[in-house]
Length: 180
Image (tube, rainbow, N blue to C red):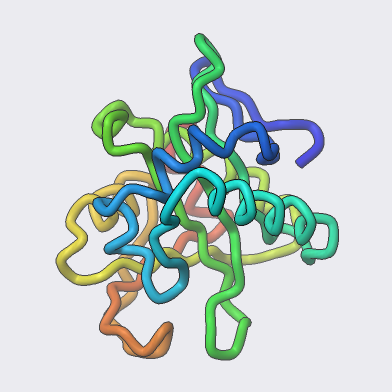
């Protein structure tokens, strides 16, 4: 993403392989991984995390915007506090999902909300007309975040990943009512 997205507290930027240790604190966490499967499995160690980051970095230039994976960095100390993604949802790869993962030790600080709002505003400059978020019915944190970032609940489905998921949607006009 060029240029990187910024708020007073956060920076959304491309991943680097040097982020492997900090990314492992996110994607190696069992607390996070249980919600990601089957889209992504828990990363077993920092070496494997480095490989995942290498794959994301290599894929990024070949993805059709706005798809991609990005690091969410706290500007005050340059610590990676989370990851954000925009990706096409299976099975038909028509719907674009916004996804967020925040390190468990950073939960409750509003980083997911702030980072998602930055990414949503940018995504809607990339010729798409809606974004979706999906969450398992018992993932209360993700459901609360989806609502907090201004997404509207549109129902429950088994369409994506063959799992029973809550589906949320936001459109560009909805951003006008969402604080920056």
